[in-house]
Image (cartoon, rainbow, N blue to C red; front, top):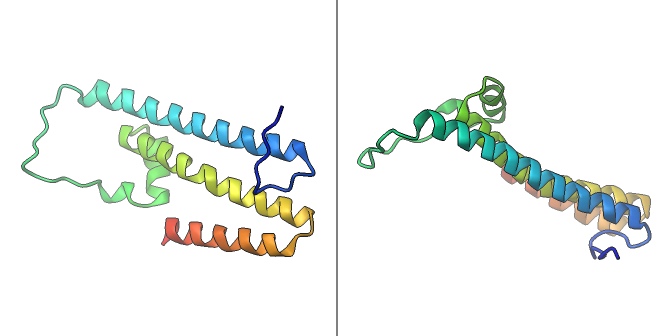
Amino acid sequence: MVELDPTIPPRDPRLQQAVGTLLRVGVLLAAAVVLTGGIAYLARHGAAVPDYHVFRGQPATLRSLTGIVRSAFALDERGIIQLGLLLLVATPIARVAIAGVAFAFERDRTYVLVALLVLALLLKSLLG
């Protein structure tokens, strides 16, 4: 039995299953990417002794979307971990976008507007 999500129109159980699959695949993919980057990081830097007296933040290349993607494709361990975290954040954003499309197919303008507003706020907070 499929458990219905109240934020998706209930008339199409296939859409419910697609959203559930999206969330599961998104979280599992993000976890796999973070785990891969974490294992690679520990393999390379696991024996290093941390110096907690000096704070070293992330390099500038890992503070932007393009920098993270470039670092990940260059097989930089921290870039891979950051990419996994971005995938984890992108999963519920994709879910809101799919909900908006579903409401558009249902011709429910109020919920389309709400979904678009939520999507805009999520994207603004992520990119801004």
